[in-house]
Length: 279
Image (cartoon, rainbow, N blue to C red; front, top):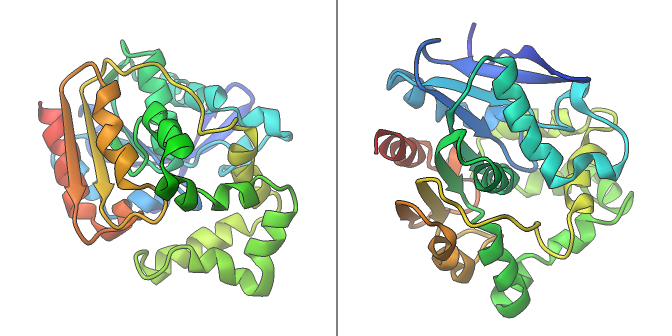
């Protein structure tokens, strides 16, 4: 089975589409994608991790998997999204694991690591820093407030869907810029164009509070990877991230890289993950 194909993983009433790579007996690493992407965002990272002997698991998260697309904004609270991580791990017989998340996947990973550190062996957060650092910057840093202005649009039911899917999903496609390979962008857009998919994905934004949510300080060994040209996350919260990690911490800044790190800098990201796992 290739990483391009999916296998169903059932967690309670939900069924997630998961991709696998690497040896079954390798140290497990769970990869969480962001918006507007799917688990395919790890296409260029997963083989590097698998070649290093890791058991790679990447799944389409709640709302992205057709079998895990419940109705109602309340079904997309960040605590439920973090719970899905452990639910998938349990379904696969995985006790402890390394965790990697990008964008919204990073937000979920911070909460998972913060609330259940006994199960997360290491954390590699990509693009989105610790949520306390992010929320502080959202309130106090004009640059971050400007970079986050799109969120208010995404939180408007119906308005965001119409805006992003109009004209053949021109605006949705434009979000990726030149950083995401065209073949991947086409598949993301097609996936989110399925009935109910975009609304479910946007429900993550609609379920959040004034910021991306609150999480405890993190006691898990952590690496934070940030592209210096990130369109959504500014330097202030990126540099403050480590203030909320009570464990070994590494900040990896990627010059000339924007928000789409898994697609734009897969080798550098894989190196950061492997360095963290080996530590």
